[in-house]
Length: 640
Image (tube, one colour):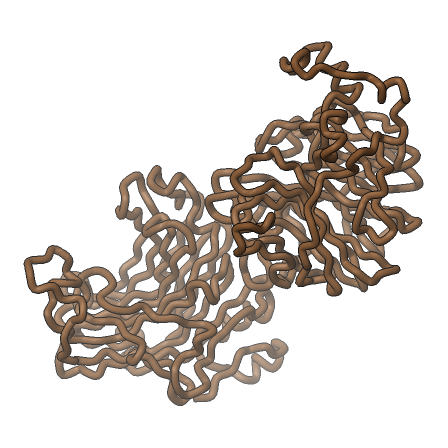
């Protein structure tokens, strides 16, 4: 069977009417880009890079035993074959058993169920599947998706196609389901169309291939058959109940399933219809290429997955931007994967490059799985040709007391990066501008055990915690890196129990500290430093320290990296400016090729569901050469 993915100009499309999906493909040509497909062109087993199989008796008291033998590709079509068989059930338990999977002594029917879980998962897009389904009694073919997190139904289910009997009459169904307050109880939005509706329009319907389509956007799900809208569901209503922690199952990646069930809703099998064939011509997934940045919205990479690069920073190198950030999991802010890398040439559309620095499987490693890896930044050293990464590290199961900095190095921008060491910063060094009389002060820790008193503040200003950590080295938590016009680089970090910022000079190769550093706003309780330079003035935007909760941004400026640093008012303006629009800064990136263009990068944290954290990238605006930030629902590079 000859198949074509339509990528032609509209004039060509008009001359070559292909299949019944012309209007669909026309939309694709105008709006969508093909991101993945399986055309099933190679005879034999389905591609294992895309598909895995369910096995055994799986769900719904169906009659079939799922096995991979019943699925194969032939002549450009995937065939899922339902068969009558008679073989022992390996799960059978002779004694009375309430588990239906174990109470059947024999397997009487077999079939296949394929899924893309862990291989091809997508968030939003157009899913197009061309198939010919078996209509005989007993058949229950389906095309559907499940979310990658949580158990059913809180994971979310989209039934692009189901065919089965209701009151013994065949129906085609298009459904959406999600979780409620009760375990295993779903809330459904179902559309069941009697099959006669389609036969009345085309008496040969059952002999032909048809196109099922899912259009899944951030606010809606639409399900079509041959361009006819069967069901539309607003995602404003599809929030899980208490059992699903009130999460949104359709704002996470889903994987596809193709299966042929037998019996149960399909009815009593017609034994004369076997072997029963369910034929799939192709599966195609399209997604829209973004033209704008939408702060606070899900931001999809080239795979259709929400970008996972939190607390990140960007490196511009040889015409491309590289975004490095923390991989967040569903249930923990601890590192389970490592530091991810993405690339882009326009700051809008990002390609996943992989894990630049993975966590270690060695439990003795400082970066073992379960440690905390935060705010990675990468800079390039032109003299050595090395890419140098620094980030904040907390050791596994030790809370936030380690406050160490990690160095990792690579020969390639996307990695892999090699872990070199972790350390406290500037052991034995005082800030170079700290007066001698202040250096000589001695503090009795017991006297200052009560925080936030006037005398305690004065002690902090005079180096209470700096002196405590002098021999071990200074704490470094939230951090960024900055390379100045002369090639010198600096490590800026929250130190002294997050009470004081430090700006520390790095060595010529960027892999160590020279011992030269200053303190900024001692006792000011700043974190999340970001820095940029414009017209000879250094600007730093920070936040207060309120855990995962957002607070008002702070801003400082200086004529030199070494100060003096002057504090300004909150740079944010407008509604929610008092909480930085719900976000916290991570980096400021200059836009190359544009004059005076800078982007403030921020994260909108979701500590209860970390992987769902959003990004708040906003243009830096200027009024009388003073930077400020305003919320924008969307913006593009032409705005800068």
